[in-house]
Length: 221
Image 1 (cartoon, rainbow, N blue to C red):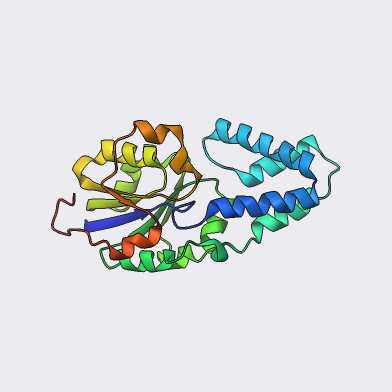
Image 2 (tube, helix red, strand yellow; image 1 turned 180 degrees about the vertical axis):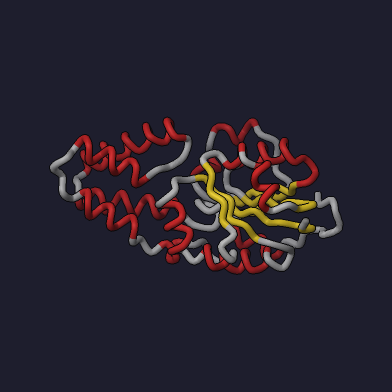
């Protein structure tokens, strides 16, 4: 049982996924054309609604089924798999991970598919930064019992850009979790944000955690 375990989301928390998507859209405009780029994103959103998480490669496979003779799809696949994710980490993200490790284990806790999301975490350098402590689920807020089994702790610090996920974790763990909301990425304007209670800690950017010191005398609040 660790005194503290810090759980860190990836997309738009440690890594600027909005910029990754913008780069992908520009690339697809060039390789596929604007019309077929829109077609891909229609498939992507439909698949996300079906699965509950973003599956870029799965959407690409469905796009290929719809356009079996479009050979440019292979270049898009290569673009995604070989994307330089380390260049899209938010400033001071790795410093934040290092700081969190002074409190106890730092664990990546993410949603995603079983191929692209692990690849992103590895190529960004986050896999090494957390000593391979990585958990990826379909809906992580529904798997907190498994998180607790794998990384038992008296207290958790959860850092995530999605306020509704922080709220779900607060309702599950109560005073045993300190929720930290970095106000980054497009989800901060989501309509759900207005109806949710404030997190324990709000920071304007992930680097703000470097000047935040948790009270390591339990319980943290």
